[in-house]
Each structure stands twice: as structure tokens, then as C-alpha cells.
Length: 318
Image 1 (spheres, rainbow, N blue to C red):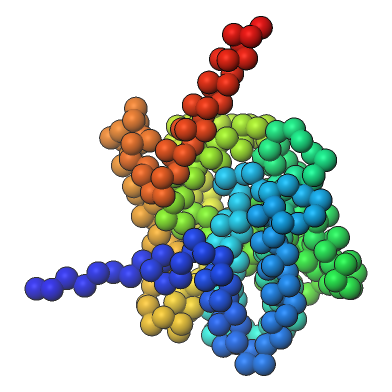
Image 2 (image 1 turned 90 degrees about the horizontal axis):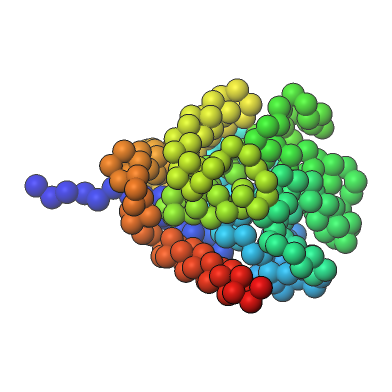
């Protein structure tokens, strides 16, 4: 009997290529809005990509390896898929507001990027206040592009939904549409990163960011890994209690766009968590050996070795 290989999330779009992600984003927008005006979104995409790659005057290149350009495009892809899925169920959204929500997704972690006069540490030191810094970056961009104060206020509220401790009832949205888009962005921020095929390999980089940023509750890489299954349980609860279960729209997206009758994000996350549990149970002492995708762990260990070597050299000079 011939076995049929099951389609995985990463088979649909090359998530390593920002251009591929953006092209799929535009395809979905044209499916929803045949006369879609793409210039505002394209301009924002190029601006944010330039920022993360070090091409934006007044800013350094992004130097956080977890909250990087790929994380941003992962979030963007998840958001447009949720919006498309909702659209396919009959949910009506205004084209201009959808564009603004997608621009907000592009800018939701710009607060990790350091300005050119900020030469200490990395952008990870802003972990605990990156949302407000991202809002400030977005404000500058919106002012320069001539967006109205009302449009900025709507996007500010939507961006705040990415905060894990935010209670949705604390945000005074201008409309139910804005609230739904905020819940979708909050869900997309979580879905995009946790469904990534290299999510587990990227978690040690997240620990480094937490360490520099002063995030409490994690003693080591292994400690963060051990707490990740619990974070997935927290995430599912947040979908239910704060984010309106908007993740349910993924199923409608995959069915109508790809003919796949399943939520590939949920499947990818469950697979990541299942494999992580296996590593923690069977190989806690050499967990790094089982995180091989993308060569990311090797890169991290090489960086740590160089840093340790420099540190020892400095001690020897004292």
C-alpha cells in the first residue's frame, strides 16, 4: 500500500524568505479584495524589512535572534491567514483597516531594534518594554506617512494585544472590528512563533534575550524548555479567555486556500511540544544534540564559545 505524505505547514510557503511570505500575503488580500490597493502595505513592508536588516537611517541592524525579521513575517503570515479564514466564514472587515492591522503586525516588535546612539548590549534589554517602544516607532512612521491620529490610535490598541499580560477588557477599542483584529494579532504572535519548524531550536536564543532583558522565572535554557509545554497550555487558555477563540479561523483558511481540512498551525505546535517532551524525558542532559534544525544551536554554541574566550582573555589581562 502506498503511503501518502501528510502536508506540513512549512510545505506551503517558504517562511525563511520574507518575499515569499509577502507574496502569499498579497495573494490572500486580492482574494478578499479584488481591487486591493497594495502600495501602503508594500511601503511598510520595505520599511520594516530595511529596519531589521540595518538599512534604516538612525538604527542598527536587529541583533536579537529570536525576535527577528523571521518572527515578524511569521506573525504577519499567521494574521493574514486568520483574516482570510474569517472572511471565508462571512466576517466583514474594511479593506483599509485590514491593511492597518497588517502594518501593525509588521511593526509589533520593532521595539527590539536599537537606535544608532544605543551602543550597549543588544535589543534584548528592551524585552520588558518593547511594546511601548514599538508603538513609538509606529507613531513616527504613521506621522511621516500622513496617517490620521484616529488610525494610529486604532493600531496602537491592536498592537497592545500582543502583550501576554494584557486583559482585553482594559483596552477601549474604537469598534468591534478593531477588537477582533487585535485578538487576531495577539493570537498570530503566538501561533506564528510556536508553529515555526525551528521553534525549539530558537528557544535557547529566547532564553538569552530573557536573561539580558531581566525577565524573571527562568534559571537556564533547560528550565525554559521545561516550562514551554506549560506555556502552550497557558496559550490555549488565553485563546479561550482573552482572544475570542479567533484561532478557529485557521481551519477555514486552509480548507478554502489549500483544500486541507485541518489546522496546520495547531498540528505543528502539538508536534513541537510532543517532541520537546520526548527530549526532556529521554535526553535532558544532552538536549542540544536533539535540536538540529537550521544549524541554530551550533551557531549559538559558537557565539557562546567566542564570548567565553574573550572573557577569559580579558581576565588574563587584568
